[in-house]
Image 1 (cartoon, rainbow, N blue to C red):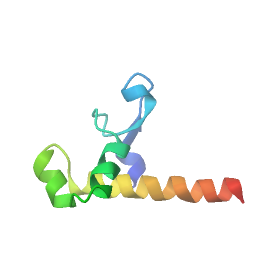
Image 2: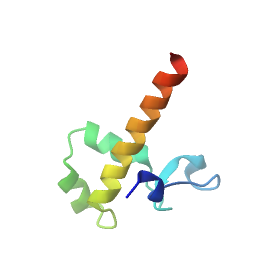
Image 3: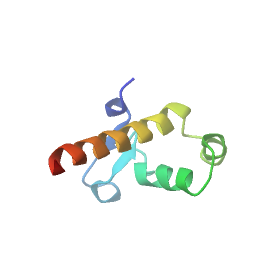
Length: 74
């Protein structure tokens, strides 16, 4: 499954930030948890509505954005 099937952007939700499945948790939130040292398993324990696929989608989304930034700045 592509991250495009999981990550949603709605102008009236969380200021238009990319969210997971229309929920109020953003890609940034998940990346911040991972960066702070939380494991994917700990995130799933704390947010029972998330799935491992959601976490993978956040990582894929971030990688794709980074790739596009490199192309734009080249």
